[in-house]
Image (cartoon, rainbow, N blue to C red; front, side, top):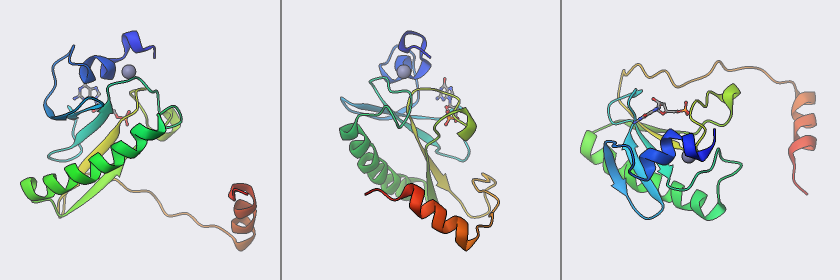
Length: 137
Ligand code: 5GP
Ligand code: ZN
Protein backbone atom coordinates (compact mmCIF):
# COMPACT_ATOMS: atom_id res chain seq x y z
CA UNK A 1 0.00 0.00 0.00
CA UNK A 2 1.25 3.50 -0.81
CA UNK A 3 1.94 5.75 2.13
CA UNK A 4 -0.76 8.20 0.97
CA UNK A 5 -3.37 5.53 1.60
CA UNK A 6 -1.70 3.94 4.59
CA UNK A 7 -3.86 3.86 7.72
CA UNK A 8 -0.88 3.55 10.07
CA UNK A 9 0.85 6.57 8.47
CA UNK A 10 -2.29 8.54 9.24
CA UNK A 11 -2.61 7.22 12.80
CA UNK A 12 1.11 7.49 13.61
CA UNK A 13 1.20 11.09 12.40
CA UNK A 14 -1.97 12.08 14.24
CA UNK A 15 -4.26 12.57 11.21
CA UNK A 16 -6.56 9.85 12.56
CA UNK A 17 -7.17 9.67 16.31
CA UNK A 18 -6.01 6.64 18.26
CA UNK A 19 -5.77 5.43 21.84
CA UNK A 20 -2.16 6.51 22.20
CA UNK A 21 -0.15 5.30 25.19
CA UNK A 22 3.25 6.64 24.09
CA UNK A 23 4.64 9.05 21.51
CA UNK A 24 8.06 10.44 20.62
CA UNK A 25 9.62 11.91 17.47
CA UNK A 26 10.01 8.47 15.86
CA UNK A 27 7.09 6.36 17.10
CA UNK A 28 3.49 6.31 18.21
CA UNK A 29 2.28 3.42 20.34
CA UNK A 30 -1.47 2.88 20.39
CA UNK A 31 -3.94 0.24 21.47
CA UNK A 32 -5.02 -2.37 18.92
CA UNK A 33 -8.72 -2.10 17.97
CA UNK A 34 -9.09 -5.90 17.84
CA UNK A 35 -6.89 -6.88 20.76
CA UNK A 36 -5.59 -10.39 21.37
CA UNK A 37 -5.61 -9.59 25.09
CA UNK A 38 -6.27 -6.67 27.41
CA UNK A 39 -3.65 -3.99 26.72
CA UNK A 40 -2.54 -5.25 23.26
CA UNK A 41 -0.66 -2.31 21.73
CA UNK A 42 1.21 -1.56 18.50
CA UNK A 43 4.59 0.18 18.20
CA UNK A 44 4.44 2.07 14.91
CA UNK A 45 7.17 4.24 13.35
CA UNK A 46 6.00 7.63 12.08
CA UNK A 47 7.88 7.06 8.80
CA UNK A 48 6.46 4.53 6.36
CA UNK A 49 8.24 1.16 6.05
CA UNK A 50 6.20 -1.70 4.66
CA UNK A 51 7.85 -4.33 6.82
CA UNK A 52 11.00 -5.43 8.67
CA UNK A 53 12.98 -5.70 5.43
CA UNK A 54 12.43 -2.02 4.71
CA UNK A 55 12.80 -0.78 8.28
CA UNK A 56 15.68 1.59 9.00
CA UNK A 57 18.30 -0.16 11.23
CA UNK A 58 18.42 2.63 13.79
CA UNK A 59 14.63 2.56 14.17
CA UNK A 60 14.72 -1.23 14.49
CA UNK A 61 17.04 -0.87 17.46
CA UNK A 62 14.91 1.86 18.99
CA UNK A 63 11.74 -0.20 18.53
CA UNK A 64 13.05 -3.15 20.53
CA UNK A 65 14.36 -0.93 23.33
CA UNK A 66 10.98 0.80 23.44
CA UNK A 67 9.20 -2.55 23.51
CA UNK A 68 11.30 -3.62 26.47
CA UNK A 69 10.48 -0.43 28.37
CA UNK A 70 6.74 -0.50 27.63
CA UNK A 71 6.51 -4.21 28.43
CA UNK A 72 7.94 -3.49 31.88
CA UNK A 73 5.45 -0.71 32.38
CA UNK A 74 2.53 -2.86 31.19
CA UNK A 75 3.57 -5.67 33.51
CA UNK A 76 3.31 -3.32 36.45
CA UNK A 77 0.18 -1.48 35.32
CA UNK A 78 -1.82 -4.49 34.12
CA UNK A 79 -0.39 -7.27 36.26
CA UNK A 80 0.12 -9.52 33.24
CA UNK A 81 1.91 -12.82 33.79
CA UNK A 82 3.88 -12.85 30.53
CA UNK A 83 4.41 -11.10 27.25
CA UNK A 84 4.56 -11.78 23.51
CA UNK A 85 6.25 -9.54 20.99
CA UNK A 86 4.87 -10.37 17.56
CA UNK A 87 5.91 -8.91 14.25
CA UNK A 88 4.38 -10.18 11.01
CA UNK A 89 5.97 -9.76 7.58
CA UNK A 90 4.04 -10.61 4.42
CA UNK A 91 0.57 -11.99 3.84
CA UNK A 92 1.83 -15.54 4.32
CA UNK A 93 2.87 -14.57 7.84
CA UNK A 94 -0.44 -12.91 8.65
CA UNK A 95 0.49 -9.29 7.99
CA UNK A 96 -2.64 -7.29 7.22
CA UNK A 97 -1.38 -3.70 7.57
CA UNK A 98 1.64 -3.07 5.37
CA UNK A 99 3.31 -0.46 7.52
CA UNK A 100 5.84 -1.96 9.93
CA UNK A 101 4.48 -2.53 13.44
CA UNK A 102 5.48 -4.48 16.49
CA UNK A 103 2.69 -6.05 18.55
CA UNK A 104 3.03 -5.80 22.34
CA UNK A 105 0.75 -8.48 23.74
CA UNK A 106 0.40 -8.83 27.50
CA UNK A 107 -0.41 -12.41 28.54
CA UNK A 108 -2.53 -13.56 31.45
CA UNK A 109 -2.86 -16.98 33.04
CA UNK A 110 -5.56 -18.89 31.13
CA UNK A 111 -6.12 -16.18 28.50
CA UNK A 112 -7.25 -17.43 25.12
CA UNK A 113 -4.95 -15.47 22.84
CA UNK A 114 -3.64 -18.69 21.29
CA UNK A 115 -0.36 -17.29 19.98
CA UNK A 116 1.28 -20.59 19.16
CA UNK A 117 2.12 -23.06 16.39
CA UNK A 118 2.03 -26.80 15.83
CA UNK A 119 5.48 -28.20 16.59
CA UNK A 120 6.86 -29.90 13.46
CA UNK A 121 9.73 -32.34 12.96
CA UNK A 122 13.12 -32.07 11.29
CA UNK A 123 15.65 -34.77 10.34
CA UNK A 124 19.40 -34.52 11.08
CA UNK A 125 19.99 -34.27 7.30
CA UNK A 126 17.59 -31.38 6.95
CA UNK A 127 19.14 -29.63 9.93
CA UNK A 128 22.55 -29.95 8.25
CA UNK A 129 21.17 -28.68 4.94
CA UNK A 130 19.59 -25.70 6.70
CA UNK A 131 22.82 -24.86 8.50
CA UNK A 132 24.58 -24.82 5.11
CA UNK A 133 21.89 -22.65 3.56
CA UNK A 134 21.54 -20.21 6.41
CA UNK A 135 25.01 -19.75 7.85
CA UNK A 136 26.50 -16.37 7.02
CA UNK A 137 30.18 -16.42 6.11
P1 5GP B 1 -0.90 -7.44 11.39
O1 5GP B 1 -1.92 -8.52 11.13
O2 5GP B 1 -0.66 -6.63 10.13
O3 5GP B 1 0.35 -7.91 12.05
O4 5GP B 1 -1.58 -6.51 12.47
C1 5GP B 1 -2.42 -5.43 12.18
C2 5GP B 1 -3.10 -5.06 13.47
O5 5GP B 1 -3.61 -3.76 13.34
C3 5GP B 1 -4.27 -5.97 13.84
O6 5GP B 1 -4.05 -6.53 15.14
C4 5GP B 1 -5.47 -5.05 13.78
O7 5GP B 1 -6.41 -5.33 14.79
C5 5GP B 1 -4.84 -3.68 13.97
N1 5GP B 1 -5.56 -2.60 13.31
C6 5GP B 1 -5.95 -2.57 12.01
N2 5GP B 1 -6.54 -1.38 11.72
C7 5GP B 1 -6.48 -0.64 12.87
C8 5GP B 1 -6.91 0.67 13.19
O8 5GP B 1 -7.46 1.41 12.37
N3 5GP B 1 -6.69 1.09 14.46
C9 5GP B 1 -6.07 0.29 15.40
N4 5GP B 1 -5.90 0.82 16.63
N5 5GP B 1 -5.66 -0.96 15.12
C10 5GP B 1 -5.85 -1.42 13.87
ZN1 ZN C 1 2.44 3.87 6.32
